[in-house]
Image 1: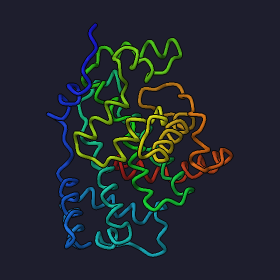
Image 2: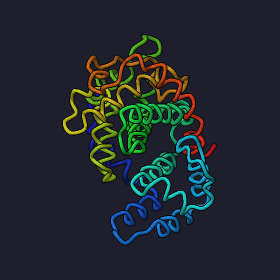
Image 3: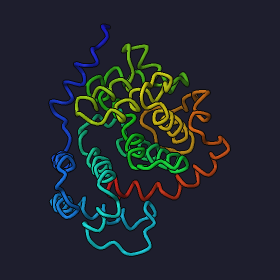
Length: 283
């Protein structure tokens, strides 16, 4: 069997899967210095379901605001314009991939794992006192998106790999590498690059199984790497990977977070997880 070309696989996907219009509108508005919170709120109000989810999120334990947030404009002000872009992306990305083979992927389980990874990234970034923890959340949410490309474009081979990995207790991402010559992490990075998403998201996705390969966003990539492993170990949901991948030996040290904080991270993950599921999946 000849190995597929990863660029061609991604090109095939982008012909039918593009970023939602509301994210594109927010992105354009962010580039306009005259855009106000009211203007951004007006864009969001075009999507009533998204508006309702953003209001619920603003009033949730994600932000712990002492008062009641009643309008989208208030929510935008509370969340902040930079974080808003990440949150809209998180909410809209789920609808991009549809009609994937049910015998290959349980989409609910796929996104539940991705959300758990995103929340774990958010918790780790909070422990590190980073400024924009929502970017960390989106990094975790998108880390396995390349696997959806494989499910869509190479469904027969992926079905065989899933069966073999389960029977032989082997890791799916390593099997992908052996069969295709690349794995879902590379495909995910290529897809995010095609969508013109930020370089940070591209690198954290591309290198989340091998943070040693990260060049510019090393700490951010290590965050996703650790969060993915914790999500695999702590959650029942998965993106197809049935076993927990190995941890990069330098990961905890690089993050400056004590490995003994796993219990705290797990506790916070448990607290924030359902809030994130409600926001991303709509309940």
